[in-house]
Length: 496
Image (cartoon, rainbow, N blue to C red; front, side, top):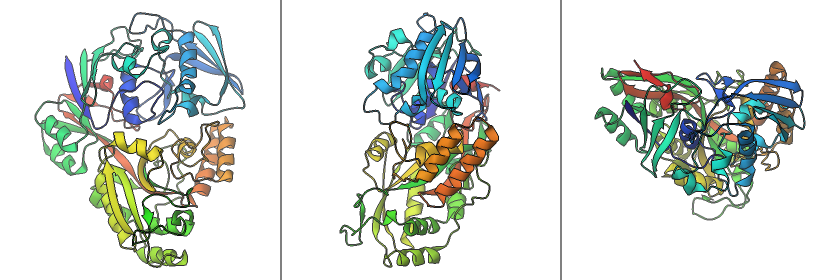
């Protein structure tokens, strides 16, 4: 039985090279990790059976015996060791995985099915980090490059499917791995179609060319819901939409006076300006009109169901007059000009969201232009520092992990701030995060995560917009258990 599904930006890249959801979704079909995450974003055993903490800084992982790679070779602790060391060997990664392995200071193979990992200090996030490290075959991946993985030569995993064919920008063809250690996929063949355009995905589903699609445009939800040929699955996701503001350069690109001349200084370095922009955004209107009710206004970096959410932090209220007053106090009574950059095929209604925000900023005197582009181009430019104001959607297991990626002072050595495009920095926030990561008591760690979030967000380091609702549409004869992490896994679809 063959099933076909489509995603907007799913693609195949070498494991451990580019940490973005579309790449990770594709990789999860072929590869596996020591630790899994269930549909509710809770940790579960993967390639490791039980794990245990030997002492505050040493973890031991017993590996599943009898697991085979797709080429028939045995999975062992050697492959785990190789995979944990591999992220640091990949230069110029646009989305590095090094932050997930930095805390590990020593690795010891006890026997072929046992490995011990040591950290410099007690580290509560090790299990969550290990969920992000795919285990590759040491034999197949040693010395392999991008084309080796894309051709399938090095794409040798232990996951539920084998890679049959990858057609760049078009599709990923998979075949069931009949030796998979977990629940066998129902489907013997699966094709993941790459369709960035919303209209193309909807049209293909309606025509019967696809069995399921993700990232449904809100304008199409009502129509699909009323169509007896299809079913929808939906869940509040962990993804928070936000705007990064450049706070580290004197003269960021695309930030000028209204005549197009450079400003004397960077206005985004002033917290009053950042707050003014936040007050200019009518989140209720965004949720109701742009997202058509399929979102929740955000006052946190993580959604309400996620560890570390701070109930006391509410979404910034719409106050254009207050925003104008703050701009005047900061020395910009007549505003200034900027360009808001965003992807146009990555998030639900991303281009429409950018246009709506720009219109709202214009009402407080900020002359706003919008430039959007495909995600494959956008993220490379954003990480290269080519934008002053940029849209990002971020999801995480917990508030402290989100803060580590988004708002911690960038540090390659610590693996902090990998997605901190604005380079916000607050040593007190960093200290709270470090304290929390060494706290094994969950209640105490969550209290520290909440304290760090409250302290950071008081500075308005980013402009929070909303939490997405994740939606999947599919033919009536199949079903899917919606996931908090928004991931779409072919092996989790089932006949209805």
